[in-house]
Image (cartoon, rainbow, N blue to C red; front, top):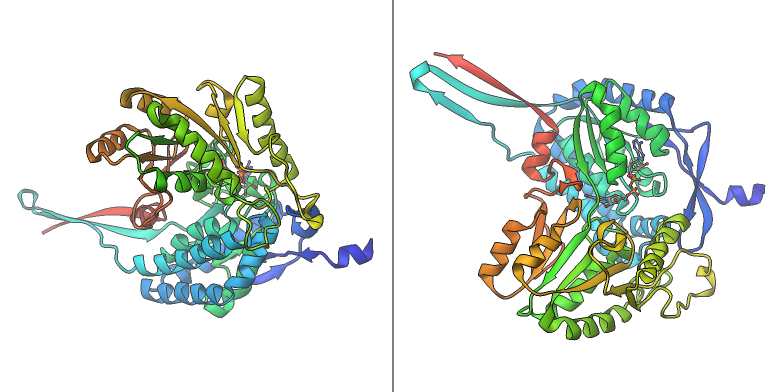
Amino acid sequence: TMAHSKALLVLENFIGGRFVPCSSYIDSYNPSTGDVYCRVPDSGKEEVEAAVKAAKDAFPIWSSKSPLERSQILNKLADLIEHDLEVFAQAESKDQGKTITFARTVDIPRAVYNFRFFASSILHHVTECTEVATMGCVHYTSRAPVGVAGLISPWNLPLYLLTWKIAPAIACGNTVVAKPSEMTSVTAWMMCKLLEKAGVPPGVVNIVFGTGAKAGEALVCHPEVPLISFTGSTLTAQRITERSAPHCKRLSLELGGKNPAIIFDDADLSQCIPTTVRSSFANQGEICLCTSRIFVQRGIYNEFLKRFVAEAKKWKTGNPSDPTVNVGALISKEHLEKVRNYVKKAQAEGARVLCGEGVDPLALPPGNQKGYFMLPTVIAEVKDESCCMQEEIFGPVTCVVAFDTEEEVIKRANGVKYGLAATVWSSNVGRVHRVAHRLQSGLVWTNCWLVRDLNLPFGGMKASGIGREGAKDSYEFFTEVKTITIKH
Ligand code: NAD
């Protein structure tokens, strides 16, 4: 009805510094109520074409600014987002289903920090120089921005991951066309309203909203976008690799994980248990770095399981805007079904569901009855070959299994196609280093989880990705290097 549609939030593309309406739209749901509350442009080739043109036009001026000038603009943008932190957090929670607490303490502060971090790091890069006296030559490298960067981001950490790409891309002097997930576009659109005030010239940041199949592919296939930074699923990355291959594009791919936690019998369980509950269920388990396979050494297995389940049961699932809630809504009805099906499959295979889905009652407030909620679920006695131990579930589900030896657990931990993040719990220093070296994983956290220094490389091995991002890595990805030789 008209009255209903009037209440909807309607987003517009942001191209060349202006908001531009689109001819067709996609419905976007509030995951905690199940209601359509927002309409997102269903952009395609035409919109992407206009955005690439705007980005190309803006490139000569933006790329010739000094790093210091760009740095000041990034810092200003960080200040503006921080000033509106609460409004952004509310919007992210409503759009994505995550708890307001998580959005307030993780997503939006990190988006602010992404701009501050790259505003600073861009000032500190040096290029290489070698002198080869026997040849009478000096060689040095110079780095220049690549051009129009295509940035594609997922729905789990919407503004956090989008700004993790935009910040280094524009700090290096590129201009960008970004496409957030069609399921979580609101905070990107809100950020566009701050760009002019921050001093970002028109055309430097363009955002085109829409689906992966239409808007995403148009960007991936555009001949004048030489570089694509993508975060999302391994399946989509394969498609992007194929579609971009004819253009020899530079790709950075940050993909899925099936992250192990390895818990030795000398671990400090008082630290390990709450952290592993958090690493399993934070953001509804919808973080690429979440733990989903917990290997516990046999001697402490029963005690661990008992205490772990008790701790998981303390996590409250419900209305994301309730500050006492730990677990919000999953992103969509389809995703909730997919996650639930994994639990059913595990049960059918003879595994034991110790708490959560299908075992404990889920009481929801009246306004959230149609939301996409699920309790934190712990499964034990799952076979390593089971799909629950092999495939990325990306929900509040974690599997706990026992192991005997170090040798055995390394082999089992490495026995999946992914290699993103691992955690190791032990108080034996030598063992921690040995195990960390042998794990096939881009990141290894010991006696902690999700502690990041943005200076250092982030990314995955095997099916978890190609390339790394971080201060130096992002700089290298978003610039083209040239070696110049001078004979004297
Ligand atoms: P997805 O691959 O379905 O979508 C990611 C983005 O790609 C969206 O913007 C989508 O619209 C777009 N897209 C889809 N098909 C496309 C195509 N053919 N061409 C171009 N773009 C296309 O992933 P998702 O479900 O949104 O996100 C969840 C996945 O992301 C999980 O696998 C998770 O592990 C992964 N992830 C990885 C990291 C990391 O840093 N490694 C971080 C967060 C999420």
